[in-house]
Amino acid sequence: MPTASLLAYQPHDHDRCVVRAMQRAQSLCDAKGARLTPMRKRVLELIWQSHQALGAYDLIAALLQEGSKAAPPTVYRALEFLQETGLIHRIASLNAYIGCSVHKGPHMSCLMICKQCRNVQEKAHPELEQLLLQPAVLGKFLPEQSVVEITGLCPACQKAPIDCPTKD
Amino acid sequence: MPTASLLAYQPHDHDRCVVRAMQRAQSLCDAKGARLTPMRKRVLELIWQSHQALGAYDLIAALLQEGSKAAPPTVYRALEFLQETGLIHRIASLNAYIGCSVHKGPHMSCLMICKQCRNVQEKAHPELEQLLLQPAVLGKFLPEQSVVEITGLCPACQKAPIDCPTKD
DNA sequence: TTGTAAATGTTATAACATAACACTTATTTC
DNA sequence: GAAATAAGTGTTATGTTATAACATTTACAA
Image (tube, rainbow over all chains, first blue to last red; front, side, top):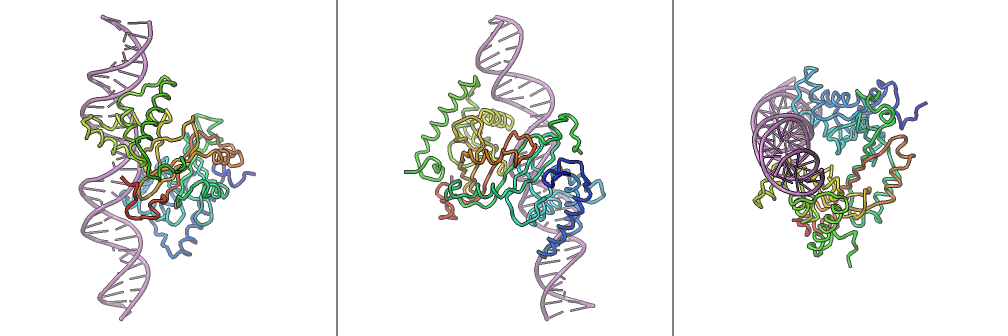
């Protein structure tokens, strides 16, 4: 039985991921009094259609294919909203976006990014949070945001360097 | 007496930083059989002229002002070389570059980035390395590169929010 | 001194992101 | 419920970061 933390790397019923993510998004927005508009919802669904990081222009292309008129500002606004609401993460080292799979408020997590298939696994990490925010580490620096990203090869791509099963 | 680890945030004889960095660059290149050409050297000097992150196009502008013909590919090539040689870091969350101040081989360090003055302090971090690279954390993920960046306010900007003394 | 590899120059363009303003849709207030 | 307000989206244009492709020059080695 696959552990939850490795789900991105395992064959699984991905529809359930999407359903769960969308349910959570709706209840989070309800709780915050934020509006999960059709555009925002659709962008989030597209992001959740895989565990791979998608670029803003990937999303734009997907929306255009669906017949939606989606210029860059529209998509970037949706992405901004979803980030602020804690529903997605921006991956700085890829200029791409991934659904947030940690179901709690602001958190410091570590993103493991497969350089080959772009699969991203998020790992919540309380110890990391403790360690990084220690005064001993930061000195008098006042932290606000953190980016922790590890790039490498996911288990699948280590075995099958050319044709990672979780790709596309 | 300021500790070495806080040097970026303290008034200091910055020329010594530059001299030290350039000496180290030269010996590192000698040791590796790499060529620290005039262009690469100049780019590194420009990066070291402050402890603030500089964008590629900042460097291009500076080079043009000096009369050097510097189109983007030239500068990006120099930056690529300097990164590979371990002389600079790219800051993913800023799309900018900073001199590496950790005098050893490949290392996992934490960059503390002031959102106000763009001052960047690098903190080498063996514990972080241990913590992040544990199998317990990464599972079967095979890590290659890491990005650890904390954005916030440096000590100076906490005190003087508008006019950080280390700015420019 | 000539051949080869490394580095740089040059032109063009790709990829990522936002500013500014117009328009539409939702929500509130009276 | 109609007017006022705010929130969201559309549209055009442009800013910012980065690279592809190929020509030329420079350094070093044979």
